[in-house]
Amino acid sequence: MRETGQRTILAFDFGTKSIGVAVGQEITATASPLPALKAKDGIPDWQQVETLYTQWEPDLVVVGLPLNMDGTEQEVTQRAKKFANRLHGRFRRPVETWDERLSTADAKAMLFELGGYKKLTKDKVDSVSACVIFTSWAENQYQ
Image (cartoon, one colour):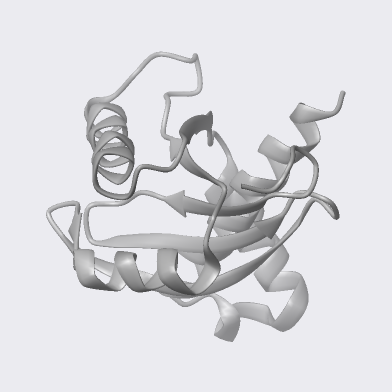
């Protein structure tokens, strides 16, 4: 395990059909989008997830927690928590959840700035959302 401030972190934007993924470096507080994972009713291909863990060797995992704008939970909030618990149980790395309100809107705005509507494919939006989740989490760690 690398020390705090120098950790590699996987970030996930949980969804029932697609799960966005990003890898972040704590030292720079930046993340790069990875290909989104297809999911069936919120369940990914766990072999693909294991490949991500093997490739990136994360010290920590951050899972976006979808909340209503007033901060209350919705049905998908519990499913995201269950996904986070499964990641921890399977891979034995620390997992944190992080409020992801507005991450999808931010991701769409970023992609639009980079290339207009043609960049707004679902898998790109999901993985850029995972980048936004990581960046929000990282900025909050050092305030």
